[in-house]
Each structure stands twice: as C-alpha cells, then as structure tokens.
Image (cartoon, rainbow, N blue to C red; front, side, top):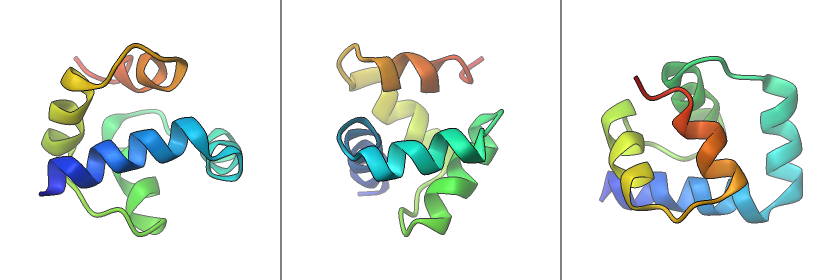
Length: 71
C-alpha cells in the first residue's frame, strides 16, 4: 500500500506544477529528504517504498531526478 502512495507521489510530482515547484524550491538532496518532503505534503511512505515505486515507474524527467538519489 505504501508503495502505491509513493507511486502516487511520483505521478503527482510529474503532473502537478505547483507540487513540482515546491519540490524544486525545497531542493531535497537525498532519498531521506525526498521522503521528508513527501511526508510534509501528506504522502506517507518509506525510502524503500519509494525505491520500489521508482523501479516500476516509466522513464520521465521526474523519475530520472528521483533515481539519482538511489545508490
């Protein structure tokens, strides 16, 4: 279920310009800070959930941006 929440966050980040702008301003620099940002916006998931969601998310600018934090 939390993986679905992470996927929804990625989709919303990809499609919602206001959320995308807030994300850019926040400038998270790690998966932990991405999870913290998402949590502040009401999306509750773990770093592992986000990584799992990214594995199945289609190629996109947002996907590439988030994947750079996966080590």
